[in-house]
Image 1 (tube, rainbow, N blue to C red):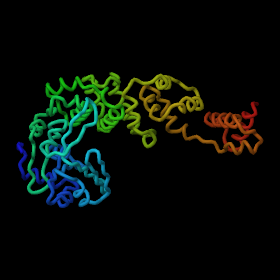
Image 2 (image 1 turned 120 degrees about the horizontal axis):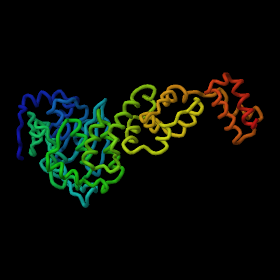
Image 3 (image 1 turned 180 degrees about the vertical axis):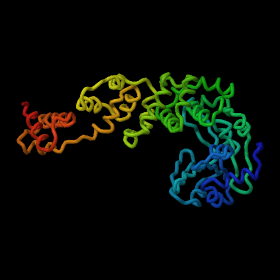
Image 4 (image 1 turned 90 degrees about the horizontal axis):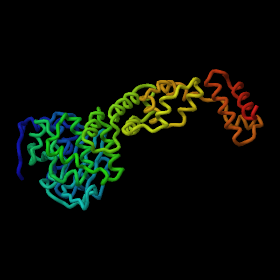
Length: 374
């Protein structure tokens, strides 16, 4: 195995490795097994970054190591992988494998392989490094990943990488933004030719969701915009995503709206109903509630970022207003079952929102009157 050693010495590597949560347990469980810490776990180890999850490759079957680790086990037979969770950490286990692609964008066909072949199938040099779990830690770096990290370069491993899996273009934006890396010229040229249309929408959406989970997703989206690899990415999308994330993370929206859903919606050009809501200027709370209730929370966040400041009051106050009466009360008041019930309750709620009535008796009287068409 052709190993390259970087500037970090064995002592530093061992010291950093021992600080990783769960690594002591992992090393104990893997005694006698050809198991290696790989990929992003090694990259972050070299960068001195904290990491809760560990990625491990085993030359052979992962089952013995999974059994030795215990914890909650989830197995994925297609790719000979397993995940072991305990407390707040996850250890992802995979059998070393080689991959071939029947056609661009297809899921790979997998065959057992050794570590060298496994590292060669990966996306970028910075993710193609390993450290053995047995013995003294030694950096296995056949593709110059450490040198690229030190130079601030993101380099693809092989010429057909983006053809085989175009979602690697999305991952490139994520790594480049998070780690402040620049694409090497050959990687950039090949990336700009990536055809996401050959990949299922589910896979693209899943990768975009990971990107949106970054601390500053707008940076990665701006790169994708500049590279031109996401056709649905609106030119203003990165800035809009940042604004939506800010709105969704603060009161009164936090805890109610899923920030990821709001950000995902913000990538593309806003739909007409969202734009209309942002431009609306309701004169009364009841009108505001009527308008806002027609859209879901993520759409409301997007409308708020586009200028609908009144939506803060809807989120904080008006959406919580409830009647003290319900349909059963109207039935007991001799209102016939049917549309009249809904008409009466809607009228009472509107009047309560606008401060025109207060208390159960007033709600019931107005609801009955409205239900009867008076």
